[in-house]
Length: 249
Ligand code: 13P
Image (tube, rainbow, N blue to C red; front, side, top):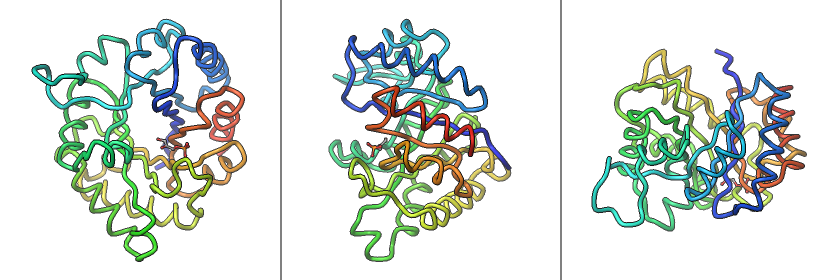
């Protein structure tokens, strides 16, 4: 199945009011590539301003709490994100799995709650350098995905999986196209095992040092349905060529 590509930016802990000009420029340029879905996941406090700055453009969050509401100091619910104007959220990014000690069960609960509320979800998985060097990357990442995916195929079309090898994030090192192809193929089988035919409709994104110079090659790789982009999503001058590459691929 050929899926339209999704190019999502993850601004991580970057972005204040003065950066909204970049967001406006990205949103305006994205309009030139109607065949590509484009989104920016910004810090939670910037969501509402981002939505106002670029009406109609997909703005996402970088995390969500699994509970509807309650005594969870500092957390944000799916309902709050929707109320602020977000249409999607990342869950299970390796930086949160590491620094916040998020486990697969928690990631699964977050994905489930976000999908049930109507948000799109980008669920991140990826192996460490140690796991790859030990030849365990495929096993580790498919196990991680199986344990992080919701049990039922609730709105599978609103779910994307991002394969982000931890050693490729922010390092300038990119997985080889052969490794990406092998991993994405394994993730696709995992999705079909879980969701049946609907698993073919879940987009699988690559993330980790995606740049204008390597995007075209990555997008031509089989089973790559888009990208999750960190550093190169902060400036329109970097991000727009990546969107353009997705339109070609
Ligand atoms: P970089 O593109 O900066 O390597 O970050 C990737 C990432 O973590 C996106 O979520």
